[in-house]
Image 1 (spheres, rainbow, N blue to C red):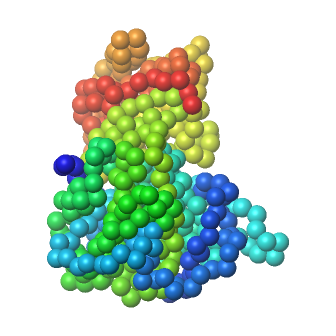
Image 2: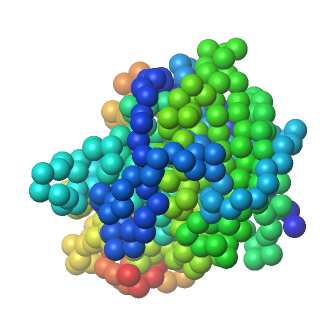
Image 3: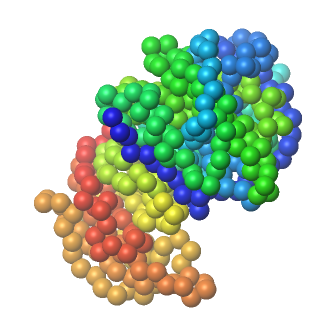
Amino acid sequence: MTIAPRPVRASLLATVPLVVVALLAAACSVSNEGVEADEFFRPEAPAVAAADAGDAPDAEEQSAGEADDEAGGGDEAGGAADEETTGDDAPEQAAADQAGADDDTPADTPADDDADLELAEDIVRRYRSPVYGYSLELVCGPFCDINPGGIDLVIFRSETDPTAINVTTQAVEEGATLADLEAAWQTGMIGDRQPNVLGRREVSLVTDPATPALIVDWEVDRRATGGALERWRSLITRVGPIAYVVNAGAIDDAFADLEPVLQQTLDSFLALPEPDSLPGEYTRFGFGLTYDTSGFVGELPLAGVANQPTADGGRFFAQDANGVLQYILTWESLSQAIYNADAAIDADSQPPGAVSSVEESRGDFQLTDTISGRVGAFMAADAAGNNVEVRVFSWYCEAGGRSFTLQSISGDERPAVLDGFRCLEPD
């Protein structure tokens, strides 16, 4: 079986200056089933020293200075004692820099009376993907204040240590095997990187021993281009209709100290067998749409509505493979009696970075057989005088009582995302 790879072009990758700070954080192997999603908590069991560091997944770090950034690390999840084999092929999962990350910080959970939970090194944060429902644990110190906004690519990049973790997702067919996933991973590697595969092994997820996974250990040397020697470990697995690559890595000098923290993240990875959405098919908040998975997509809250997207309001945005913004879809709960399509179009006539816009045309458009709307075309300009054509579409879904506005900068008269849109009953 062949799986189409999802390569990410180097122009999308971010550069991250590395702050070399030794982190002696401990990894905990306790069950925290009662902890809410995206909640801080102090594990009930004592911290475990890095006795199992050899089996721990490594964290990925985006390269120092101005080197390109990308993800591809995991550890032997499941703690299986399978024998490690080395190979010459260098599989790597490309990772794009995430745009439009949410700035909101999850609320802290009460802890001991005499202990401060926030940013303490023994505090753990459980992150749960709001779209796909997979979850993992992030140890504080490096990963407390990170709030990703991506969907198919989620990046946790430490601001205090030379380390990063990210997760990529891809829809796969039912018969896809680990060999298929590894082949897609290898094909999707960025061409300008020369990873050296140190070993690979088949294991099982710690959280679900019935689910097989693949661990690939590798390194990449960026010192010739001003970067650093990076150590990586990649956890590759499939749960239900989605293939996951959990990447963790760090610069080589910091790898040993950070490995227990990264191992805990990989060992805690857990995914849903039947998620509501799939990569390329976004289904949330009472509507659905299809999108191109070759770029980067994310969601953001709507100002003044909530600190995260909800059925009452939010935004979905998409960039192409070169990092160029293609469109922003905005939804908002609104009575149909006060909904005004032309007013909504006027309010969205300037894309991010524009300082002015001039209307060129306006008219009706048909979204579906039963839903019609309005569309306006504008020429927008930024402060430097650069022009971009913008089309703004507005329509109303009676199911759920919400207005939708699509601001398109793709240049297409009718963006493809409109053809895949559907109104659903709200969750």
